[in-house]
Length: 110
Image (cartoon, rainbow, N blue to C red):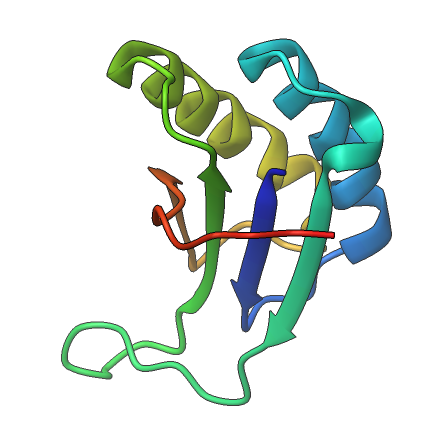
């Protein structure tokens, strides 16, 4: 059920990050490992602020079935922010963000 999407313009060890992220999500929100699915979308160009710097971005979105407390989602966001730097080739000039949200009521899976 966790639908995880990672948009990134920074060089990222995608597989290593996903393999470290999935157990973290399982522990944080009480799901199963095989329910975690991560997609990566490499961003060809990103502009931060006035574009004066060549900053890169990594944004992780984790969508969960409804029912988790806001505090649980906030702790998971912080844990993901802590995990990300270990999977980046460089951290200087990289803007990191995480959003943990509820899936829409229309979500279905097979």
